[in-house]
Length: 326
Image 1: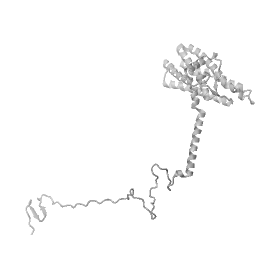
Image 2: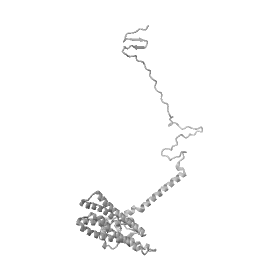
Image 3: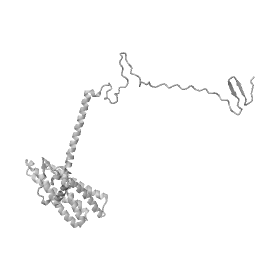
Image 4: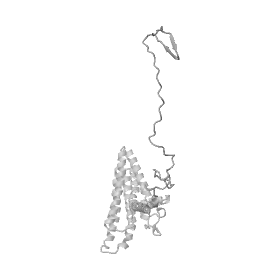
């Protein structure tokens, strides 16, 4: 018969000890069995990094699954052969490099036709002595006697050694000075604005480009063979900026009377300078074109081009300077 003990007492039977808890809604705890530690997960792939390649029955190692070439080694094809050892691949690479070199030479040749750095350096080979003498020649050309360009071994001498040689230094500096002087004149008249100054600069640049293009087209259509290059024409056309600077300065200092006096003097000087310079360039090669049916008309055509180019200078000077002086 089961014997009940009062609450809070212990009963020892063998090695098991039980505890009777008070009747307050608690239940005796149950001993939970611990789960065994999880076993290691099975490997999805075998580690073959440290394994030795298998050997066949004849005692030779068989190739593994990796056919990649060692780091830094020559490229190989899927069959494991060196690509550079293939004569067809070498021939294709040599042919491709030859085509690339030919294309590079062709591009450089086409660029040199329109703009050669050596030719451009020639037009900027000046010094202070040349600049002073050239400016005096532009403003007082009437006393100059020798207008022929000097040559050394079939090559024209640089501007620093020949005052008759055209240059691009004076036209470039004169253009920049003209833009600065135009900005000052507009500022004095309370008409300055970046838009007006930009319009003035772009107009002056466009006019000289149009003039050079017209001269090139005229020489081409009339089949006039001359050694005048595009840089030569650009230099001769840019000398008018010196006359424009003198005209604007005279107008700012002495008013409209000073402007028209300086305009008349500088225009005549530039016309005389352009006519004499282009005459030596255009008419000097007349003997090479003296044969043919139209040989008698070519001297007049050359003269017309020279005179028209010289006579066009005063109109551009007046157009680009009259609005700056009031």
